[in-house]
Image (cartoon, rainbow, N blue to C red; front, top):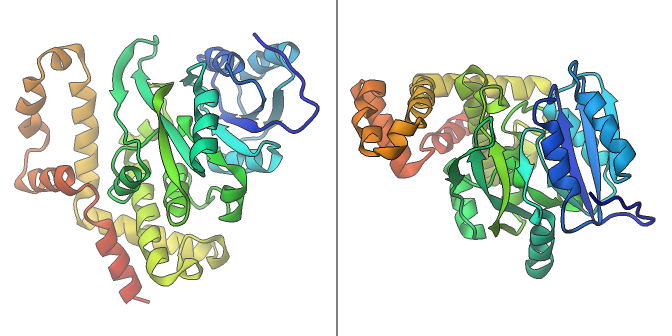
Length: 339
């Protein structure tokens, strides 16, 4: 394990926020400290953990001076990430979550990619693993900027947040993560970056994403994350049409505007029956990820009518497969017409 104290500012800041992450934290930290590219600082912010998280981090503080450790009362992921951006000394930010693992060449691959192509944001290919570290599947994400943006605008699959590597100055310039969004804050940031920034994705494997029931995106069947993703995309359409000053999620509009906007979007999603669809989709994916369905793929299709058991749900499923998010742009138009 390398231990180097850099006199000058490092080129990269690896940023982690952790809350009660004792189970997989050590494995995650080791994966960063063993990177083939060593010119980085590793900011770890303990967001009010009550387990052994702090003790684990302090053990590594003695070993490697690149770790910068901060502990605070719990304020949530979005605010903690913004705090990390303010503390960062690197030109580039590499995100990692405490339950995930970075491949040992991740930073080297991504740094070479941004320097060669002038990207402001890149991700990396990743694999999904279970609680024991066994590979479940590959997260198939597009590599070109054009394809990534296309998927962003339809809520399709792109690289995981835990593989994101971005230029700090660009993100600071557009206001960082927006604290009106407790979840989907990364998706919202990529949408705003997509307007002017050059985006790409490494063809090399960058990380392993841990699939477990306590993931933030799995709380409440993933419904809140889905709803906030819609808010982010509706906001993007409004921003694209009317400019940032009229974006209801911009901090300068105030908490009341953002709250009313989110309530409006939530109501529109409920009227479109997407809430029920997302709940059904959650349980469908939960079932098809078992070993039997992986071996005999036709079962994945045979059980569709069990979960999507009404004409309306089948209609939504077909539209979602063909178009992705087919409602957010219409919600944006309705919102603008009410103003």
